[in-house]
Length: 161
Image (cartoon, rainbow, N blue to C red; front, side, top):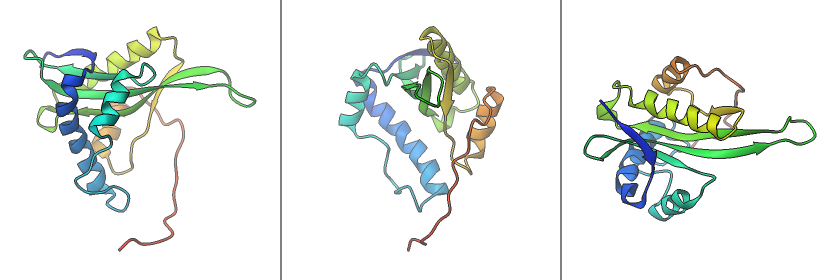
């Protein structure tokens, strides 16, 4: 499928919301102890604020009829202190392709767009997090050339009822 990547606009919010629900379902199915079923990461008002924030660009993949078929939420991060070299990063907060359209290279197109955007913005690297158990995402990101930078580990202390 041919898609075009552009910055998200307010008109895209209903479709972005649909995709946020798809992503959240993956997480709540894998980790119902952490993620509320039937919820999503951002409200409509939060999405409007993010769209207006130049430090948190959202890019959408649109098909020939200008319908959103995927998105990626990005965040500029700035590092450099006593122990870290100064560098800027584009952190991918979320990347989603409509579940009915996966396997058509839309995710690859979105990811490659973010790589170019980050490079053109003078960033050192692109980072993201993937939840353990989201094997398809891990496989996708490995295929895109990402490697493990660090691990977040946990020890659960209380069982939720």
